[in-house]
Image (cartoon, rainbow, N blue to C red; front, side, top):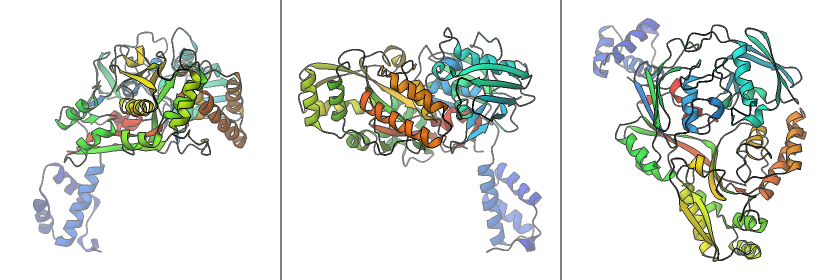
Amino acid sequence: MTDLRTTNWTRADDAAVECAIRRGATRRELLQMLLAGGVAMSAGGVIVGRATKAIAASPITGGHLKAAGFTSSTADTLDPAKASNSTDYSRCSAVYSRLSNLDRSGAVEMELAESIESTDGKVWTVKLRKGVTFHDGKQLTSADVIYSLKRHLDPNVGSKVNAIAKQMTGFKALDDLTLEITLADANADLPTILALQHFMIVAEGTADFSKGNGTGPFVLENFEPGVRSLMRRNDHYWKSKGPFVDSFEFFAISDDSSRVNALLSGDIHVAAAINPRSERLVEGRPGFVLSKSSANSYTNLNMRLDTTPGQNSDFVAGMKHLVNREQILRAALRGRGEIGNDQPIFPGNPYRNDDLQPKPYDPEKAKFYFNKAGVLGQSIPVIASEAANSAIDMAMIIQAAGAEIGMKLDVQRVPSDGYWDKYWLKAPIHFGNINYRPTPDILFSLLYASGAPWNESHYKSDKFDKMLIEARGSLDQEKRKAIYNEMQVMIANEAGTIIPAYLTGIDAITDKLKGMETNPLGGMMGYRMAEHVWFES
């Protein structure tokens, strides 16, 4: 190993080398500089390599970040309570902050809150950070937090997490920086729940969200729903580090290949959530890299149980046996994911029922159920769109399997623009796309409870609803796991949702963009990429 002790080298000398590199000095010039200072050639190489690595890992301020997501519409919003897709989440995460967050391992970390604590899981005390200001200069207080959380309980707001927020039954300001939240029943998951994008904090009394007045890392410059968002760095951001880019622009390019081509041509720096087919356009191309997350989202096929043909349980059973999960994972997803078992708890979650097996691909059994339902030979519309990741490819595979047994599935491909407003939750048979949620309570409350806002198959079960409340209030983890395991079986057998696979998220980025990490809350670092990344010099 090279011995540097004889050179009397100091940290100040390291800083001088780093400064020279930032000014554009070549490796030869650096080595000549070191030799002139009495450093041996072997030691000089080590010093230059060390300085280069230090610079690569050190954030640099400056630059305009341009990122493209895959979905947008005129319903795009800056109201975090109403956010419903990755474009909304990315924009809101740039201008607002929340009380807590999840780190890359899924552990809770504090944000605007210094602490969120409880002795019984029912009454929680939240202490806020001092000196945090909104973009308009207003100081953050407990009144802002109470206002932000209570909005979710107002049916006129239309919060996407109303079903989750309903468990918060009491709010009290103890002082300007301390508040108390009381739950209907004990729930140890509250700090995790408050990390959801919807629970971002807005100023007390906010009714006009077009200005995006938050405490986040960026200040809104321009917002055109369905077109783009432009933000500049918040120079008074409450965190000591970041953001590093001067400005951030986000918009959507719905067509996957067009989004990738925009990256390859240099028009954007990030192409979010690319299709596995598009990986080939990026892999091996100099100047670009793929940022892959764990299997933390899924595209599912939904059959509404309150309308034909989903009202017929035999039709639903037939569809579940018609889905060739292995082929979907291999062909549609290029192996980027894990086989799904028709329930929403993601692989790796401690409450996941790993004993629950997916319905096997069995065309003859599917044909039996379709005959029993009286639909064999009928033309059944299936709505699909690129808005739901890989939905078109999945639909083609399912359609082909149906054709082999005389089941006519009419796949109707519709535009991405407006899909989530016009077809999702509405069409009798359609595809959805669900991002990661960290707890079973959140997933079940959003997707399967009788009053769930995103109940994709309109599943209703009094037993399920009662079990959800029971599990939420239990501090006995073994009992909780047993309840959640049974609920997963109920969903897989009774609901009209088919989850063929859990998807590995893939964002394509320029290799000049540094600092990108994975986060369980979703792609683009849980939609908070703009706060953390920087451009290399």
